[in-house]
Image (spheres, rainbow, N blue to C red):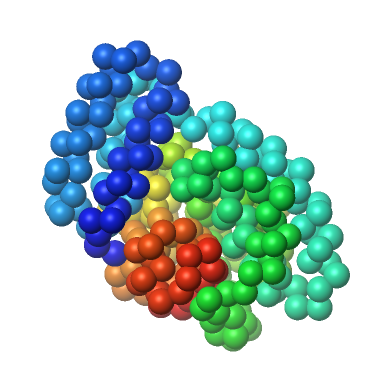
Length: 280
């Protein structure tokens, strides 16, 4: 998905937040921000927002010497998710359609996105989020694909919501599941370590996609990931960043996310705050 002019302020805000969280001195922050502005001045040379966000956040890490600027926020999100997982699991256990509600809970976990919505209260809003209907729902197509699927690939998004992905993984049935994460701490995205701590390993094999961007950038993908990506019977891709990076990936993908920006809202023709489960 091409970068829109509306994306620029979001990209700049995210790197500004990251720079401040590194604890770097003013001189270093100045040098980093000048470099980030240089990146943005050439934004039309990048294939998608994640394609430019990757090097922008790599610049923050390398120039500041801080490997994981969002570490404290991710730890808070992980603790919040771990605390609320049993409540959400109990909620789903009371529902007849386990697959639907597990998919919805996994998507609602995306509200734990400190990069897009800093300061949001997850605990107070989770029940309300579960009640928000899908603006677009290809749930029946997902059910059909899963009936014959042998291999499923799930592309992770943010730290914390990984806990709620365990509900989705456990509802997919008797299939071989691979769960792919980022190769390094890009913004607040999930890594192998985050997935392992969340209990994902009980339900799926965890791998790195190879991508260092806040989205699955196939140009950076490992050979292992590409083989699984190309041959999986079903691919479920979580989060807007993965959609932006994979929109023209050339294969069938179920995209699952909460709409958080006007660009995606307009692109899909749904309201801000609604949920999307779209086969594309």
